[in-house]
Length: 338
Image 1 (cartoon, helix red, strand yellow):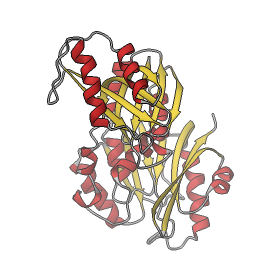
Image 2 (cartoon, one colour):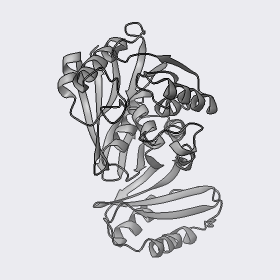
Image 3 (cartoon, helix red, strand yellow):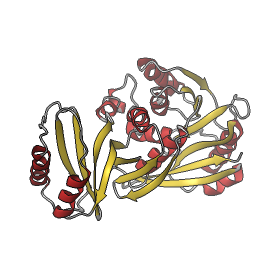
Image 4 (cartoon, one colour):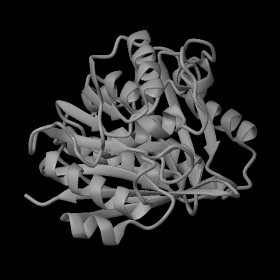
């Protein structure tokens, strides 16, 4: 069964990585069928509807999940033929939407929707644009068109309500909720997730909302109190500690994932440490407390590959996120050897 993930365009690489990591975390039997700009198509061996339901409540950088009925060319005739050939019998009302990914296609989507609606009408189906029982989509990306039935949608508006300035405690310079959730997913969390530089708890909130038990640490008491306010506001199961990330009071190999955004010199790091000492010490501690075969996602302004390898990590992938002209984040996905 082919599933198409209609990805958000807010980052070039994170959305795909998030989907793949979630599927791996669910131990799904799948492989990548097509990786297109703005769309990832995977071949899932079983439980497509159940998997889509789980991912709809977990993903952050995906818009929709579509059960693929056919893949065709990019021209108007190709699209008409694609739908005509692959439209299967169904019960109830329908809607059909045509979506351009970026600016790959010059097709008039509204006109194409009306033309495709004619195919449905000729087969005796009735449209309902407000509350259809079946929702069909055609994605236009690069040199292909993808036709299928919608089986999952991500409520991205819920992330808007959790923007930092809407939370009980606000502090500038933190991750946006969608980014935080995507990085939590990329870490493939299990039972416990740790953020040793937790700040106001944004990463912990996103992990806790998908059922992960979270542990946070920080050296600023004010931020820890703020994190407590935020975590309690969202009813997250948490533990917070006033501690040095380079000397954590956590036993060896006890956490399933780490996601963290250290201060890396922006404002209030541990003042007695140089940036190099902070990176070296914290990465070694993260490696110590992380279980074997598990992931850490580490955000920095500078390359950390040398420090990560010295700590014992393997570099899985790196994502670059330009926040503004004076801040570019390097998101390093690290893995501890089995």
